[in-house]
Image 1 (cartoon, helix red, strand yellow):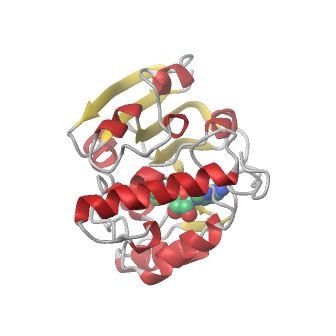
Image 2: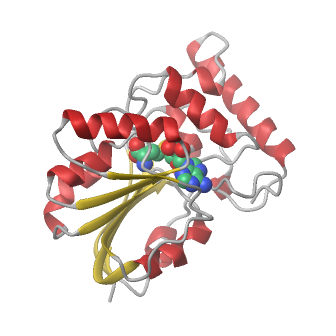
Length: 247
Ligand SMILES: C[S@@+](CC[C@H](N)C(=O)[O-])C[C@H]1O[C@@H](n2cnc3c(N)ncnc32)[C@H](O)[C@@H]1O
């Protein structure tokens, strides 16, 4: 975790900032090569959940919060208004109840859950994202509770949620805290990029520590009852997806 921005969490363990900046620059250049013009990370317009931008899920650059705010301020719905396909396709497996959307961004998943009858807390470090989440909720005639907070510092209630959703965000040290916040019998719905993403267009510059290794996600929840686990790669997005129940 970056020492200069201890409050900002995301994908990977210890990496000096110079490595991060180098990484992002290399990544920007690789995107530039692929599209034939110079495009910096913050100028990319993610088009859908499989876009290259999302490979840098939750990055903890020193000014990460400002970058997320700037991205969300400048763009329309960066990740779209539709929920992640994995969540939408499998919502029938999850009984409605109190849900936490972790690093919720602009609320596409939180609003979907609310429409399905969940009582939703949506946490994100970016107030700009949460403004859009509230707008999306209003447009859909549902209510969500938005919490602008750094997940590393926000005290999640113990045994509180019936469902916890994590989409395109990976901070391994958060896992024990999420487990504590989940009620017995509650469900975790988790999807994030795997190391195979480095083989997809735009993914070559990604750091392996920021990505899930083979079977890692399942092992992170090994004491849980797995309802669904898969690793997939459609040549755009290589992800691991899990739904599991807390014993
Ligand atoms: C790739 S986006 C995913 C957004 C959302 N889950 C979705 O699928 O649309 C990652 C999100 O993590 C948030 N984030 C990064 N670090 C965070 C932290 N320490 N605490 C809370 N949110 C954080 C960013 O603001 C951003 O909205």
